[in-house]
Structures are given as C-alpha cells and as structure tokens.
Image 1: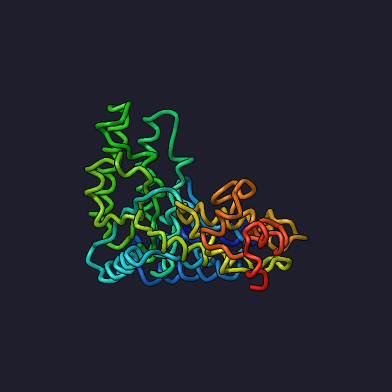
Image 2: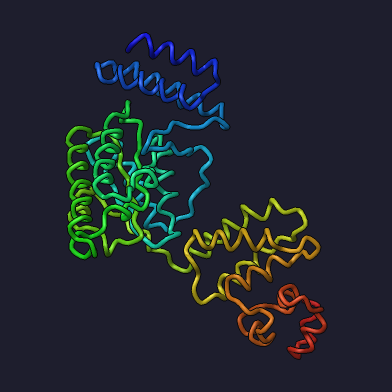
Length: 355
C-alpha cells in the first residue's frame, strides 16, 4: 500500500465522494489480501459492508463491469418446494467448502431466478456483485472479448473471495450456442473465451460463488453448461404454487392501500378461475398495478381490474358464467358493480340475496 492510498482516502472523505472512498478502501483490501494478510483484508471489507448498513443512500462499489447489488431489503421468496430445496442445497454445498461453487439458474422470464440469486447471497452473508453487460458488450466483438477477460480479472481480484457472490444475469447475452448461432465464428470466439476464463477462475479461486441465469437454456452452449456444478430449473410451478405466490404478493401490497377493502377469498377465487397463471414476476406486476390503478372511491375496483388484467373481459362475461365458476351473488356484486338484488334476479337466486 502506498502513501497515495491514504491521501486518497482522506481526500474522498473530505469531498464526501462515497463511491471513490469505497473503491479506494477495496483496493487497499485487495493489497493486503495479495500479500497474504487475509484477516486484515476481510476486516476492511467487513467495515465497508457495515458502513453500507448505515448509509443506505450512498452509492455502492462499482467498477467498469461489476456493480454491487443491495440484498438487505430483498423480499421473501415464495418458491415451489422442489426449487426451495435446491436453493437450500446450494447453501449447503457452498458451506461444505469443497469447490462446488458454480450454479446455473434456467427458466422462463419472471420465474424468480434473479431474486433467488439475491437470496443465496443474503443467506450466505456475502456481498453480491452483478456483471454489467451494458458496459461489457461492445459493437466490436474483438473489444467484447477483451472486456470479458477484464471482467474475469476484476472478479479474480475481489478481496475476501469467501465473502462474494458474482451474478451473470441473463448470461445468454454473451454465451449463445456456438453451433446454432447465426454468426458462428465470432460468437464462438466469445463463448470460447468465457469457457477459458471460467476455467482459469475456477483453478485460481475455489471460494468465490458464481451464479448465472438464462431464459434461453435450449440455446445455451453445451460446453458451458458442463462448467457449472448444478443447473436449477425454475420452470416447476404448479397452479397451486402460483396461487400461493399470488396470495403472498396480494397480502404484502394491499396493506399499503387505505381505501381498499381486503377480500382475500374473492382474490383467490379469481386466481383459481384463470385457466393459465403467469409466472411470479408478471403476476406480481398484475397484482401491483390492479391495486395502484384502482379508483380510490370504489373499494372493490381493484378486484375488477385484477379480473380484467388476469382473465379479461369481465363486462362481457355473463353473470351465470361467473356463478358457474363458483362466485357467489355477493362476490359477483363486487366484481360487476351491480346491486345484490339485481344479480340475484338475473340468476333467479333470490334466496341467496341474504348470503
């Protein structure tokens, strides 16, 4: 460590340049790590992480190709049992410290891959760094190749590797199948460099955890798949799982809206009435916008919006059809905005009017 490093720390502190201060501190930690003083390096990184807890508005560490992701406020995940068990397995594998540290999450968009990666980092009590593909990808593939080498060098230089998770979110951007790609030669070079650098990183570092996600597993390079210790499939949601996810998001969001009457039973019936439920990412947005866009003067408007957003054409749906799907007279009244007596007359269910 040079005197300039200390002077830089003082300078950045006086200027209140939190990002530069943090980067300089990390560089100092890297220095001590490189000379074998791992304890001091880990202590410095611990202080940085602790400082982040008390300065939530400050910008996190960033490099050209890596950005730190805040995992302090991640929402609890509602995953199918099979996927949840695999996530627990990843935690166990890393804690065994036997070099099983590279995992590929594959599945449709919105299936929870990125959020699950955040939870892995949180459960392992590690900092999460995400590869910034905006800076990595260059119009000149030759420069992209050089950037890939640089990002792996940055990953390898991170101090306290046993406290880090690196996420390649949607890695298929740079790792398409070398055989099926339209530009076989150039894309093949990119993927080959990734393979080489991943092998080199694995040889040099047995502690850092690598997680990659892909929406295009069928187009993923087979040689690269073999570089991962485990592939976790996130396309294992049954309808019951998605109903449970929907209920969780509804309960989380609805408490923030004061003029809305919570009706979990009717909400769940709408979920069950849908022939196909979207994956959690899309379902979350549908629930959130249905609540947010609802009329503040109509306490059940969010349910009508939710039905339309999820199933569609509530106004054009016959009341008898709704009744056949299990909706009660009172529930149809809430959805249709008609009086209970009017609904009962249309259904010839005057006896149900007092339900």
